[in-house]
Image (cartoon, rainbow, N blue to C red; front, side, top):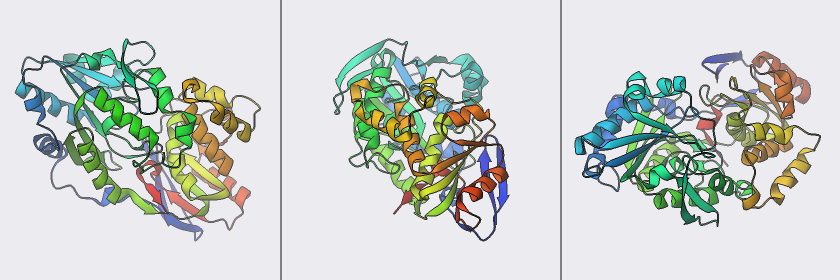
Length: 421
């Protein structure tokens, strides 16, 4: 059986023999939308859930802020943002609109990436500000339910109307992306992000893909969004081709929940255990670095047998993705020692990128990870993974480790599925 795996902006293919016991895919790609991408979004904006329309909300509002996704997210902003701008100006043609790029704790988005995301017209004609969690002036909005300080970009607090775009997909510790995540971590301060991503929360059994109930990370995020005054969202669901197949708008909680209902019917897969599990991060832009690729590894983690092998396919053209993330592993400490150190840190002492390092360590404690990328071998080895340059080489090495009769499971888009018992 031939299986294609996204890798950057291309695909890697492999012809499997009888040892392939399954291919787990979401059913999003089988879903046939009833109209064009633009009309899906336009119709969602005209029929908001739990809220007035964006054009109604904008009446009399002088300072409008749209929180936009950054370069690490495949949100179809070229479709969503023009329609949101149209709706706002329909209600108030004189509104002062700011597009605030929600980088969270990522590096700033470049001019080239902004053009790729929004198009030349919006970049040249609209006011765009890139959030910097370490540099921007923040406003204190009290304590989160978890006890952490809630500090957000001053720009959103000064807005008369705050809205956001986004997309909904399974998220490896927040349950699902989209909705409230535009605020936390999107435009929150470093201090707030670190408190929300603390080791205790990351270790919680409820901080997993597909779980919102009792998820401590989600609870903090939703509180932050409401406290910051996020009045309106427009979120989409996309397929493997990054095409919009569903759109929803309205209240940050109610509209997001409606989108989650749609998605969970399509992306839930029954757990299959295998000796070797192959996963990806869905290709560009989500496989730009090692940091992001940990997400796709968590689906493989749920399926691989203890002591097995995970083959992670991610081009990582942008490198490791975080200096602190890299430095965490740049020592002689064992995986058990590293994990114990994470758990000893309380929320106030969470360090940069700790959550990603903690999850990767958890995965490595369960299975050997072979990493297929274009990266320098030494960088991959620093993360305690085995570097290879091709899928053929990866499968050959995995069979050397697990034996020629080892069972193999393929997850062509690891971040698009929720593995269920």
